[in-house]
Length: 112
Length: 460
Image 1 (cartoon, rainbow over the protein chains, first blue to last red):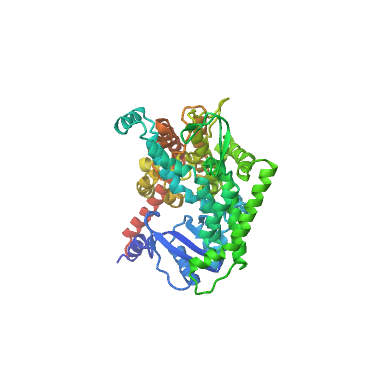
Image 2 (tube, rainbow over the protein chains, first blue to last red):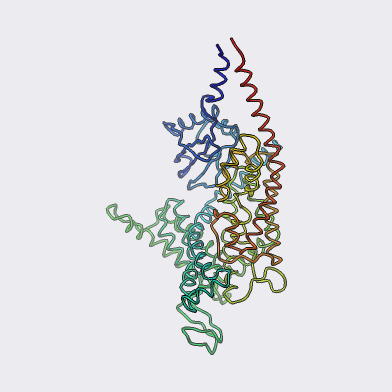
């Protein structure tokens, strides 16, 4: 029985899921009124699908962090910002995002 | 390198982001966007009327008669000659919108205030034709809105007026200092009444400014801003220093993950347009554009400089990197990325390369990403300065227009040739960095395959 080969094959083909490139779109009017749309791509960011996270903004952000840690590629994350208080797009390192646990801190961090 | 990057991100980026996300810069950059469709479509009409092939004009004249270009000029004049009015509306309305206030009223107040502080007469000289009549002496024709001040020359004044109106309008509305109507009144009516008090204040302020400048200088606020602010700002940025600083800033901030082109475009947009329109005004007089020397009458750094020569393939002129990947990649990752990125790259879209290759926050790609656009800026500047490539006019090509086509549109065949040269140089500079990265990926892919092969051969 080739147990290790089966595991290796699973890792090769799935790894839980294919490596994902994430793109976030942030809209809203401030730190208390915002919406984050999470998108992922498995082909270097040429086509994106919406991540189906549900719950409050914090709950969805938590799920994103788990997804990013498990399946996110090592490169930076593209963040499109279109808020009334800030609208300059950003790119954050994966590890920098993983350190930010609170979604409101994440929004504040976009402006710094 | 990592500690320097972290130090920069902690110390320098926050004040830059504060500036970029300030109410003022956001209102300017978002408000100025409103001028974009008019400049682009107006450019098309201008281009058709002034196609750089003499045979075209002859052919059109033969078909439609001598005045064939008049309707086309009517369209382009109607756009370029009122860009300052569009800009003041856009900036005032966007400021108000970002503050959660009625943007339409703020925008209209911006236009009214701008016109209050503008000249309201047309100065005519001896020999000028007015309504078919040749003037025998100089005069000022009243009750006119001279388009000379509502286009390029009024750009900086439009920003100042737009911001002032946006600030004052929202100050009153947010403090509820307004004529209030019952809730049953429709929103449009309520907004109109709400505007009465700020409108009275702004128009009175405009009148006082008009009186002040007419008494002190014999002119208007718009003319004063043009002389004291706009001309020096154009001079500072329209220089060799500007040709180096602009591409540097775009790439530098993009590398740190801040959208550099938006940052620079937001600040420089008004100057770019003013330079383009200034050049167009020279052409209208029948003179040729001269970029250097004693007869200098043209600007070099304009919208086309950034859109079509500094950001070909996207910021960093990554089309050179994409071509290197497409032609020479050996790793599966970069072969795939090169194939996928080629078509978007030709349309100057490169986010997948910036984040997929990745270039952002990748120390290894810092040098080519910064150097390539600077070299392009220098080459373009000197090509125009020396007269090898013609100066830009009001004819613009949207930033997603593929290189070579965009060069043809904005600067004729010489512009297209310059773009080809820049792309070749970009590819040559990116190539060695790409090769090293590619070799790294080949090694990782081979190790990954070997690991899986050895697992496949194991038996329990």
